[in-house]
Structure formats: C-alpha cells, structure tokens
Image (cartoon, rainbow, N blue to C red; front, side, top):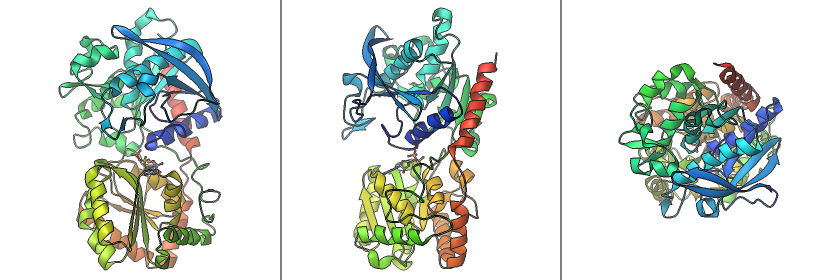
Length: 469
Ligand code: ADP
C-alpha cells in the first residue's frame, strides 16, 4: 500500500484509520502486506531498522536519495521513506503558512520510492494506492513497460477516499515529477487546465475502489464528480464501493482506556458517567440531564457545519441543548463556532485543535453526534458513535447514508438548514422518551462494521485483478 497517512504514525483523518486497520486485517487473512509512508518529522524511527541506505529515486532530470526504514506492527511491514528536505518538517501537508508548495514532488518521490521498495525489499504482486498522493504509482507502472522485469507484471488498485482533493499540478511542473508531457491530455491526466495526480490514479489503475457503495454511485454524477464523473462512468466496470470498517480494538466502549467508565449495549450506566465526566471537564456538570450533542471533525467546507448558522440559536437558546465541538480547519467555520461559543458560554464548548483522547470522550459522553456533510465518502466518526451509543444525526449522503438507518440514527436529505433543524427537533423528541432512545442506542451499539468483512472484499478484488488477463 502507498499512502500519505497511516495510524498510529501520521494522521489527519479517516485515511489514516483505514491504513492503520485494513493492512492488519489483510494479514489476518494470510496476505503479506506492507505500507509505504513518508517519514515525517513527527515519526520516531528509533524502533525501526534502516533497510536501505541511499536509494535513488529518479524523477525528471535528477534523482532524490532516500533512506528506507522498516518497522513491523501487527504483522504489517511499514516502510518509512526518509528524506530530510522533503519530509523532515512540522506538519504533514502544510504548516501555519498553508499547504507546502512542493507537495506534488514530495508524493511523487514517495511513489517512486514505493517502486524501489517493491524492487529491492518487498516483492509485490499488487500496489494498492490511496488518494492523489498515491496516484502516480499506477502511471509509473504502466509507463515502465517490459523494461523492468521486477515490476512489469505488477497490478494496481487505486482507492478514492475523497474526490475533493485532486492533486493539481501545473503542466510545466510535470517533468519534475517524472511524468512526460505526452500524458497531458484530457483523456489522460489533464483536468480543467491542470494536471491531476488523482486522475492519474483513476486512469491508469487496473481497478478502482471508493469507500462506500453510495459514494461510488455519487461520484459518477456531475453534482459530486468534480469534473471526473464522465471518466468514472467510463470506468464503472472496474469501480467498486467497499465500505470502510471500524477498528473495534481501538473504538470499543467496553474497554476504552480513555473513558471515565466503560459500558456496553447491555449496561449503559457507564455511559451516563462518561457524560457527567465530559461535562465536568468543562465546568458544566449541572447540565447532565440536558441532551448533549457532540462534533469531532476536520472543520472543512465538505463537512457542512456552515448549516448550523441558521440552527444554533434555536438549539442552544430555545431548546437549551449542550454542544461540544472538537476540531479545526477552515477559518469561516472556526469563526462560526467561536462566535456561538461567546454567545452561549454555558452550553457550547469549542475545543480548537486535534485531541485523540478527547475524541474518545466526546463519543462516549454524547447522546447525539452530528455530521451534516455536503458529501461524505465513508465517514468513520458516525460508525464510532454508533458503537458508543451517541446516535448519529447525519445528512443522507455517501457512507453516512449507507451506515445509518432509522433504527440507529437520524437522517436528513437536502443540504439545508431547515431540514437539519427539523431532523434535530425529531432527535430531541426521541431523546425525551428515554425508553425509546435507549432502544435506539442499543440497536446502534450492536451494529457490526468490523474490518474482517471489508478486508475479505479487498482480498477478493486483489485476486480478481491478479487473475485478469
Ligand atoms: P475525514 O477522513 O473526512 O476527516 P472521517 O470521519 O472518515 O473523516 O475520519 C475522521 C477521523 O479523524 C476519526 O478517527 C476522527 O476521530 C478523527 N478526528 C477528526 N478530527 C479530529 C480532532 N480534532 N481530534 C481528534 N480526532 C479527530
């Protein structure tokens, strides 16, 4: 696998969770699986072994010299590509000044190094590449032809975790990425006057997947397709939607070490203690009998929190709901939460930033969990919140629609403040009937989205791709 993130080493979102859990689940099925990842400054390699010193990755006119470190975790070989100039910085994709301008080069080198890992360190049948950062592997493979006996039979699977990030590069920079100008064609990698590394993955991979069946259908429509819907329709025969799983080793309220108390579907008393502890943390302990709505998210435009602008006065003022928000991202969305937190200091907590233990405590302490996404390829937080009995309130899109139903949560369809408000009113009405609410919590907690099933589907796909002529 080739990816820019993998838990527990580097994480900004769900992609990391997938790369942390799918590979060990595949190992459990007997697959030899490796993950190739940049060695960001935050990754400690003292427990890893340097297995290749000075590997040359040729791109354009020159080469980058990288070192490869290996560390095995839960049966998976993690290969870290080290290059101080490219990856030894604060931040994964950017820092406080914004995105790194050389991201395309950073991930081109990752893709080139992944080919080196396959050539010298980990004989490979299939490359499974993730998002635009892995998009050049399928292109490089197709371009090698028979010239490289170690690689010319290797197949590729490309997974779209989010079509909203297309890895755009100016045409005149392609040479620096080791991509010849002849690929710059509208039926290959050109997209709206730029080259797209995501499109490279979609065009050249042997099979395509995305992370839920519903999203697989949505991205073939102009509304969700970012200009790639035509291409995706043309490739629909090799495109499948495979739902992400949940790592219940990490997300399990019965043994979660971050919680004030553990609990299960059969005994929810611990959940009430978690709610009390979460409120106490913010000096709001007297509000334990009011409904508590949680949010844990990147605060990106995609996530749809701008809808709350037309909703929060009613919910926080008139209905006296408690809202706990954990996240950071777009300035506009952050400002919205800062403004409402100032207006409602007694019932809106905005914790700005990334905080893994707090994410667990919010899932455990909340009665309801909000994800009003514009689009959502799969979404993991609603799957965690199902298991933690925090009933999801979601817009019925992508994986949210595939994983939440009327027995386990609350959905609205149109991306509209009014519809969200109506959905929240309904959720609060059910909350006011404790027996009914508890029955829904128990149904939610008993849902099973474990990786084993999804991993088997990936394995079936790998076998199909290998057997195809
Ligand atoms: P996406 O991949 O689009 O960000 P997902 O719902 O698939 O959304 O996955 C989000 C993952 O990132 C979850 O594991 C969630 O707990 C975590 N996460 C997001 N924001 C934060 C945050 N501010 N603090 C801690 N964890 C977060």
